[in-house]
Image (cartoon, rainbow, N blue to C red):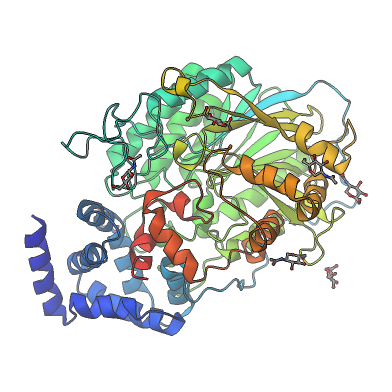
Length: 591
Ligand SMILES: *[C@@H]1O[C@H](CO)[C@@H](O)[C@H](O)[C@H]1NC(C)=O
Ligand SMILES: *[C@@H]1O[C@H](CO)[C@@H](O)[C@H](O)[C@H]1NC(C)=O
Ligand SMILES: *[C@@H]1O[C@H](CO)[C@@H](O)[C@H](O)[C@H]1NC(C)=O
Ligand SMILES: *[C@@H]1O[C@H](CO)[C@@H](O)[C@H](O)[C@H]1NC(C)=O
Ligand SMILES: *[C@@H]1O[C@H](CO)[C@@H](O)[C@H](O)[C@H]1NC(C)=O
Ligand SMILES: *[C@@H]1O[C@H](CO)[C@@H](O)[C@H](O)[C@H]1NC(C)=O
Ligand SMILES: *[C@@H]1O[C@H](CO)[C@@H](O)[C@H](O)[C@H]1NC(C)=O
């Protein structure tokens, strides 16, 4: 099948006047912004002749560069290639959008410059904001789970040490060298048994409610279909509903679509849209969020705002994929799109309504705003909203990185002090064992201020011999107990943005404390070494709620890491493992 396809591909490309060798040479000569734009121009020539030659050419590049198995190349490009071809046909090859594509695909033309845009706000901040006061009542308990990535085709006994982006499936008829155990493997996404085990533990802990920050579908980016993704979303909603007696407030992740990362703009000049995802989750989430919010999910690209039953708290869930660098649907216009699908405008509306009612808000989303994989524009615009509604927003919760992390927002990012710390993004660890031990967070929450009094991470140790018999979950650490004494946190004070800022100052001078954090990132498995410049950039990233402020400078090294992330490992420090194996993995394989 494949040699024939390649042969057809050569013919098609010949007809377009571009040979695979030419493409390969252009790609391999890409070492700066202008050569990247030249490469896009060559690719555009192919795209203009149709999706088929484009897919074949791209697949050949992938195979010749040996960045993945041929079937992985073929499946991935067939899924994601048409979006890129559509982009190239829709835009010029020298403008800002082309440069941003170079950034997203190849780490070239990287710029953190923001297109100036003032987010429209209905009212200015009240001069005398309502201040919520703690009455010292016993805390609520809230569970934060994320990135479950359940592989419903996980096969016990299948090869766990394969050459695909994820293993533990019947990819080969050969006798496995490392047979997959019943409950999971670091090379594979979560089996259902592991997810069930976590849900049972959450129910045992007995939260008042849970928040789920997305990514249900596994990393089979080269195989995923709409029916498979739909089934994954429906099934996990049902599993959560069966296992958990308290409500769940979910949000969509970048893998909760097919192809993954693909959430179209409603104004794109195509018939394609992601309504099937929003329709599926509108139905699946209604049991927890009610009919009004379910209708918002359907009409506001998966976003919603709802009162938590019985509490003076609203959750506002946002589709962060509309701001995601690897959502290739965002690159099909040369005109800047400040608010794709109106998610930012929806946030403003929901926050204004909450402020008017005197209700605090928790924001729930998948992708934290401060990393290099959020577009600097939308990250900056989101931050404008945060600055305006900082008295209303008492918590912001994300996942995506698979890591136990946090990001601090400041009223002035040039003056990063405890006094200027105005917001915090809490980032939950993942269930999937591909990036460290499976884990989730439990927050103690003041029921009057909805501030976080403690954040406890629970985990299961996949290296423990008992794990394959039955995963046992245990408290890994309490942030209050571990970090509180390091900054002299008073007993009744919350884990506020100022607390976390002060902790970063401790991390900068106390390497023992920093190394503890570094170990916690992956829950003690595959801990990445971090010293010197790595410590500085990690602390810089803790202080970056906007992506324009982080210290992730994608240099040549990023490309190499992306290549190795074909097999995502826990030690990888960049965002590639969140993306899964994608188009950028192919192009960066050339270096
Ligand atoms: C949009 O959908 C049409 C019809 O399903 C499909 O043929 C086309 O390839 C899609 N376009 C992209 C860019 O995915
Ligand atoms: C997995 O496969 C690689 C490459 O084939 C090999 O080097 C490695 O030793 C294997 N690991 C295990 C645990 O068998
Ligand atoms: C922000 O901090 C910088 C550096 O201290 C200072 O120069 C600037 O005036 C501050 N901006 C505002 C708006 O306070
Ligand atoms: C942070 O540190 C500053 C300066 O040492 C101190 O005034 C402030 O109380 C601390 N804040 C918290 C929440 O620990
Ligand atoms: C540094 O951090 C460690 C680990 O948390 C702690 O035990 C130690 O007391 C800290 N050192 C100082 C000087 O605060
Ligand atoms: C997990 O279990 C292994 C094997 O028993 C042990 O070496 C390791 O320290 C454990 N990890 C954690 C974080 O407890
Ligand atoms: C880390 O930051 C400190 C303080 O900002 C600086 O003195 C030091 O040189 C930096 N170290 C590295 C390796 O960049």
